[in-house]
Length: 213
Image 1 (cartoon, rainbow, N blue to C red):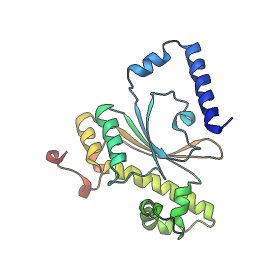
Image 2 (cartoon, helix red, strand yellow; image 1 turned 60 degrees about the vertical axis):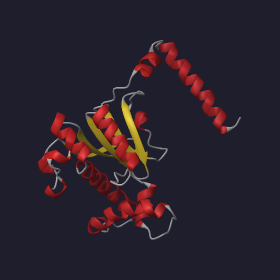
Image 3 (spheres, rainbow, N blue to C red; image 1 turned 45 degrees about the vertical axis):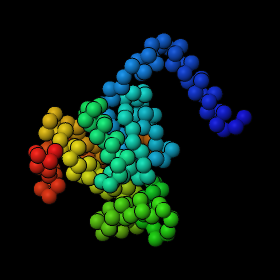
Image 4 (cartoon, helix red, strand yellow; image 1 turned 90 degrees about the horizontal axis):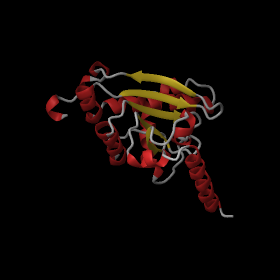
């Protein structure tokens, strides 16, 4: 059996199991989605949002990229963010990194990865900002993991700099922004920060006037 054929068989078994426990399960999913959470996570295959949070399909709206980045020129991420915040009206946006992140590891090095260098540069900028603290770590693993944490914190800050989040804060006092790091070695989430709707949390240079929201 080919690997992809195994996936199809497992999908069938999953569908039959769900249907056997709840005959209306797929009817409800097909009707609408009302997630309370937007998850901005890493593309790493070992960090599945629903599994590590124990949630069902429909509970978390998910966007993933290398190293869970919030890049202001990334129309893919911005489109997901706007849809989740303005149309789905999520109450929480979670940026979830993970220890041992390969993207962060690559950004710490001087090795060239071709086109990926363009993306890694965003992580390198975070490293540059926090290099003194990161370089205090005595091992490479610890250095990468410290940068993983700083990266999550910076992406949370980049979220509240967007007019999308600021508009939602003004209109409905939501969503909250959360920064998490997932541990591959123990399956546990380390909560780093929660930012509640508060314009004082945004540097004045990045606050938008009402007419620009």
